[in-house]
Length: 363
Image (cartoon, rainbow, N blue to C red; front, side, top):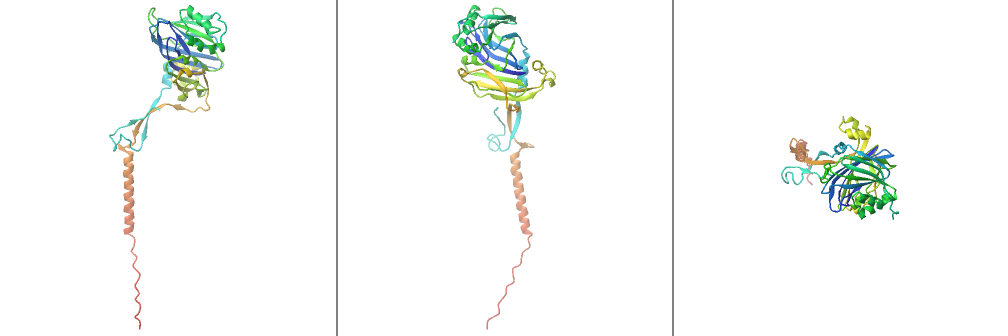
């Protein structure tokens, strides 16, 4: 089974997030401060558990999620998200350097430096294939032949589908995808839509792991994406889909069954089986360049990796910088060598000069 976690943001009335779009009344405003999604796939069925944190003055809103096949919807487990964040959190470590830097003696005071982290058919009526009340959500599962039909259904239910969103939905219509339309309402009647909403869990048939991203091109501000993927092997996106190259921040094999209940919700999703966790971050400075949905595939190798934030410290021995001891040791060795050379010369025997031969006098 494969899982991923996606983080993003959106601002209404027509701005989109990574896998859906929020629609509110023209005179009101709602923003999603954070969108967290867990996506699972077993080769034939995909599931998405999503939680939204919203704020604004709108008493209600509609959120639209395109799905490749007919979906079932239920409430999800909120503890799943905190477990995933804890599981793949970065770690801290200390690394030492040998030669002094600008802040070290003798250049400056003693101290440490810190390292940086590394064209549609004619409109047809929308078919409402299911409708449920789940916590604060009024969930309608829709089958529509084109965005115009979806727009008509939203208008009948008090919402207006912006033109940009209708255009962005056309690729899903061409692929014959369906929609999950969720009417969001506050727990207290009459109040604004605000706070952390209960997570929703969607399930639908899919022969590939795909995470809808096309609607993010409607965002007015740069978007960020965080994917937490659990599979038999390390995973990677097939492409950048208009953003910066995806960056792996964690990769490693995890056995939740050996964590003594620390990851109960995650263990329930994986069925207690060991999985390989891959965390991927990606940014979209220009969301309008997003040109497709994310597809995930197995990487070439299961190379482990974990983001580590380093604190750099000068290497010392007994409180004395190692480079000082090294220089002192070198000086001692040099002096000792000179002494030995001098002593060797002092003990060397002196060779007497050859005898002088005086020639006999002439005559």
